[in-house]
Structure formats: structure tokens, C-alpha cells
Length: 332
Image (tube, rainbow, N blue to C red):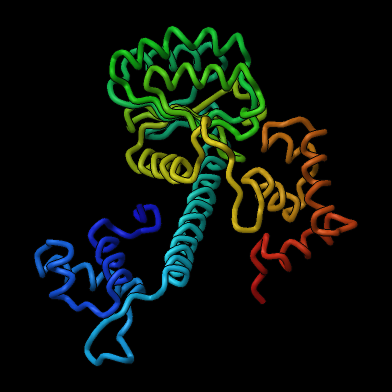
């Protein structure tokens, strides 16, 4: 029951038993729970590390369980710290990926290097994707930015997606959070999940990307015109970094069927991303592209956040965001 807060079943049962019998010792716990003594002592070590049990002031050499209201606060604070660390790792991975992608975006058609093949024009890109789809054996991982997906494209993808899933290929796709408001995309994702595919959403994605069998990746040269050209990447080091980026973002993403959650400051993932982009000086147009929404929607989100902050300008919104803990303060 408390596994979601980082407490295993054995430690939880010992904690509950100590709450029920505050004066009982190890022998009483062993008898009450009918568990081996070494297992009970291991559970007490775990509880001690989590600060859920403390030395008793009344009975020297004995332990007592802290009250549940304090104990749950301790567990939730620990989990929050772990989530913050995971978010930091995610941001670091995104920065590395952005640098990597920028390097490949600067490649000229005449350039070539081991592990890099240039694809010029939509025909070459489509031929390459068809070949990869034909040869894939285990897994497809995709970034699909741009918001709501074209209905015609989703209809055309269904037969191929079904074929891959029935072959036992694992399919994981990351969309922008904005697709939650697009019924055709939601219906497509629901259909995909029914066949075993997995779909999650995040507020923004670094680029469009497809990775097959963790050995090949296709990334567009320009995020503004994905059909103009792309690079086919097969280098081991590059694929290791891109797969790590996907896994990091996937771990923090939300299943499309789940309700969008809010953080401890009351911000949705989309709102938190908007605040960060505003603080970086992005325009409504740039924010809209990153979120996969219209400029009008991006402007509305920004305006709502400014009203919640009581800010009259975007500069003031950035200052107040730091004061409210919505953004980290800048070190001196």
C-alpha cells in the first residue's frame, strides 16, 4: 500500500505492527507478524534509514515508530526530492541532446562521416523509413512533436502499426501534451494501446525522431521543414545518447489515458514549460510551436499565468516566478 512512497511490503508491515503495539520489541514483532527475526531486523534497518523509527526516550535500547502524519510527510518529502533529481537529470539530457542535434543540423549535403547518412528530400526519407520499418525486429521509439497529428497520416499509419505490433515489435511514442485536446489523435492512441502500443505525453519535445532496435535513428535536419532532409544515424555512441534521452523523457511523461497531474506549486506540465519559455524570452509564436498549440492558446496560457502571479509584464512574471518557487533562482 505504501510502495508508491518507497516503502517495501516487509518494512510497511513492521511499521504498522509497531504503531499497533508501541511497547513491543523485536520478539513481539516476530511473533505478531510470523516472520523470521532477520527479516524483521532488516525491515527495522530500512525504517531507521527512512527516519520512520527512532530510539525510544522511555525505554533505553528500544525503537518506537514515529506517528503516521509525520512518517508520511517524511516519505513524501523524500519522494519529492527524488523527483526533483530526476527532473534535473532530464534537463541535463535535453541539453546534451540539443547540442548533439544542432551539430548534425549543420551538416552539409557533401559532408559524410562514419555512422551518418544524409537523406535529401521527402522521397529518400520515406524510402529509408519504409526500409527501417520492414527490418525492425524488437522496438520502435518515437518523438512526435507538432501537436495534433493529421488524420490522413494516422489513417495511413494504422495498417503498418498493426502489422508491427502483431509481429511483437514494442512501440513507444511520445506526443505533446496538447494532443489531449484533439479527439482524432486520442482515438488513434487508444486504438494503438488496444493492440499493445504505448503512448505518453510531455509539454515539449526537442525534435522529431524515430529509433529502431536501438541501433538506428532518423532525425530531420530542420525542425521547421522535416521533409527537406534528415540524417540516418547508426554510430554506437550517438545511439546510446539518443536512447538515454528517450528513456529519460519517457520516464517523466504521462500516459495519454491518465489525467494530467499538477506539481506541488499547482502547475500543469504545460504551464511549467510555458513559464520556463517565458523566462527565456521566447515569443508567443515560439512557445506555440514548442507546445504544439495555436498562438492564441499560447497567449492565453501565458496571460493566465501572469494573472496568477499578479504580474503586469513578462519580465515581472519571471521575477515573481522565482519568488513563488516556480523557477529556480539564478546563482550569484
